[in-house]
Length: 430
Image (cartoon, rainbow, N blue to C red; front, top):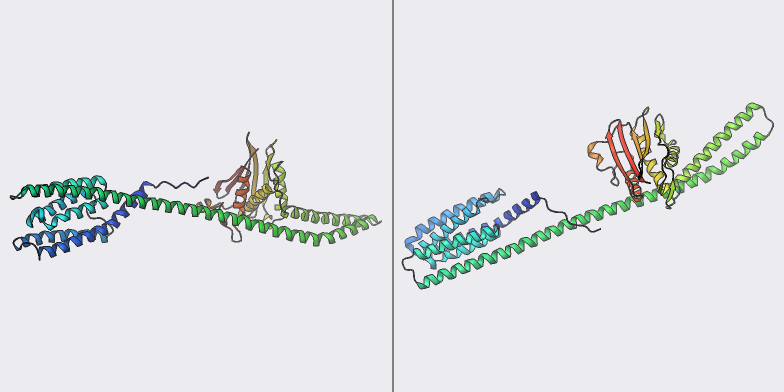
């Protein structure tokens, strides 16, 4: 299974475009300030003195526009961003007038056309950039034809200037498109990397959780075996003595008491056997078995749980329930975990219900408690490793159960989570 990158929602795409515009706006501002400063220097040192007043006035208007653009940028916005062609038209008129009052088509200010085209290609779409080129070409052509001293050289200069403006527009668009595509590709790769890291981290957490559970199970089995060995031998000796005494001729009341002692000893031995059976390393072999037998086995173990006191367990078993194929010990662990969780969620005097049904393809087991329920915020996290709502829980029970059920090609889910009605369902294939 490959990790496919997710598509970017429209809102994210719009946000990315807005971030791009804000980023290039700072470049635009620097270009404009550079052009204005150089323009002031040229006008007040090189330009003809007769028109300095007009040129300084127009540059001051340009300074005012650049200042407003800077204020909008400080607010995290782009000045007149919704009217790019209007801005291009104003710039075409502005540059044309600067050239007209300076030296015509030979004016230094004609290079402002190139700066304007470069800025437009960076900020806006190719259509806007080419439209801006058309406006600037028209502006420069009108400037050339408005001069009374127009000549063949002026015509050649005009044509060459328009050709260079067109080439600059195309080159700027091509370069900007390449930069944007590279940025989008890097963003896509970054998102894909983040998704891969997230998936690998989740896999690592799951593997770690399974390892912790296996280590706990092994340690518990070792402890149970040790206890059974230490307790089992004295119990066997006591049981033998009770049986020997019971063979002697004693009064009936003494035989009755010895029988009660023997009964309790057998009960202790049975409890130890059940403890060892549950805690021993489970067989991984898939077998066919009756779900009801496994549930009853889990109930026999749960009856020794301290939270069981004062609570009832009701079973509603379907008749003729088909057998299933799975690892029996693992399914036992799932049911025991669900039963203990249900007992933890209920108060004394309340109870849980275990119900089985089946379809043609699967067996369905539901465990319902009438406890406190599960809040909305916790429901989506129940099967995550290390998530628990208990003060003493490990957060591994439902996670391990989910893995076991899915390995058996089944599913476990939360059907109801309301107070007095919390139901977990396990579906296993026949």
